[in-house]
Amino acid sequence: MVECPQARRHVDAMRRLDQLNFSNSYARLPEPFHSRLRPTPLQGTHLLSFNPAAAELLDLDPLESLRPEFTHWLSGQAPLPGSEPLAALYAGHQFGHYVPQLGDGRAILLGEVQNRRGERWEVQLKGAGLTPYSRRGDGRAVLRSTIREYLCSEAMHGLGIPTTRALCLFGSDEEVWREEVENGALLVRLAPSHVRFGSFEVFYYRRQFDHLRRLADYVIAHHYPELREDENPYLSLFREVTTRTARLIAQWQSVGFAHGVMNTDNMSILGLTLDYGPYAFLDDFDPGLVCNHSDYQGRYAFDRQPDIAHWNLSRLGQALLPLLGEPVESGVERANAVLDTYAPDFHAHYQALMAGKLGLRERQAGDAPLLQDLLQLLAAQHVDYSNFFRTLGRFDSAPGARNAALRDLFVEREAFDRWAEDYRARLGAEQSDDSLRRHAMDRINPKYILRNYLAQQAIARAQQGDNSEIERLLRLLQAPFDEHPGDEAYAAAPPDWGRRLAISCSS
Ligand code: AMP
Ligand code: MG
Image 1 (spheres, rainbow, N blue to C red):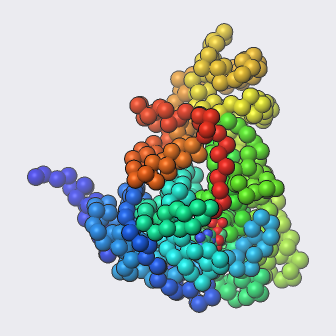
Image 2 (cartoon, rainbow, N blue to C red):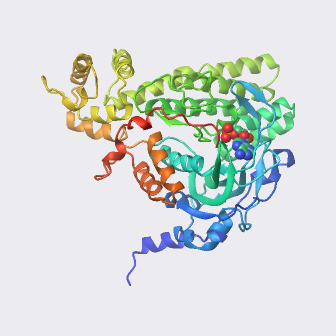
Image 3 (tube, rainbow, N blue to C red):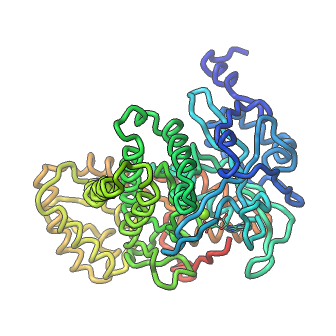
């Protein structure tokens, strides 16, 4: 058989699971940063879904998922060669209140794999049993929440939004008690680092400033090496995290993603979307949507996310104060100067992303009110957010064109017509070409998002032993801008039962 030499090289670079290139650095940090321990195996573990796209990040041969050892090693039944399992310590502000000790209560870090591109990926098992940080929890994760995290992290990646990734998902026969008896499951997730704002807070509030510095040095050395030579690398770190967070939240807002639990322990130091719980993608545009069933005050409502991220960054800045120089007042001033960049940075990014969603190449005066008017209209008329923008790509800007498909998304069609006149004029002002614009908009406005009702359907099937919906959604969501003929139903707004599903915080 003749083989393409390039394909051969590719295969050669793929590794067996027991030959992954582990290079563990977090385990080298001293004891208070983590606790060494072994995962507690689940009963009757079986592989439910495997994601080859994430396997590539580890240089892992996807065929390895077919070996029985795959489940043994990655679900924590037997030690994976090269791994040094540990649970990490952190704290955090939960719903505005400081909780002095959290930590990986059910997640166990196996270690970091360095791939042939030189990237390091932490391999973490979520749902791997009790740790010293489990508090009153059981160390487990249930099938429904594990499927939600598995699918959503890959959906976010498909949308181009920074996120942790998901390698595979295991089901089990083990009974786990939540509001009712459910099945335990385990997610293998990947990220360059799972360090959170709360990882810094714990040492600040314990007044362990040496450890605080050690953690900052670690994060800079491994994840922000370009900051090492700066005059004040810790201030630069804070600036960089602030910028990344502002951009991340701008992406969330533009795509209509509500995280649901933006506690500081769920805020990534790398600006990744981290810890998927009761999240939701907006169906109809409801800016005040509170997707977390237990968020009685609406603290984490969709439209509060930009402010909450700023508040969370203030907590991080506070925790970094001992590293920002003497006297402390100057440190405070420097941190506040960084925080002051957040709002303008967020707005600039959000406006740019929304201009893209509207298919505008140029920035012109009047763009902000055009967008504002539209969002008000979408909210007032309960129009499906993603489907509106996808359909807007097909807007016919010829004078007198009816644009029936768009109009029909609105109850009051004349209200849309009025906005459409402004939009048509605005497109004319930059000599927009309909077909070029449609092409560009289709790469920005996704056709497929992980609507809660879709996740719910996949969960219900999986609970009956049928994983086909998980596989199908994974395929659609990894390419959310493509048309996927035959699967159009997965782009539909929710049926009545699937609107505003209250997602329990228990997971
Ligand atoms: P979360 O709200 O999922 O971000 O979790 C907040 C904290 O609770 C983290 O320290 C988790 O590790 C911990 N936790 C959540 N669920 C469990 C569980 N079932 N067992 C042990 N710890 C848990
Ligand atoms: Mg968390």
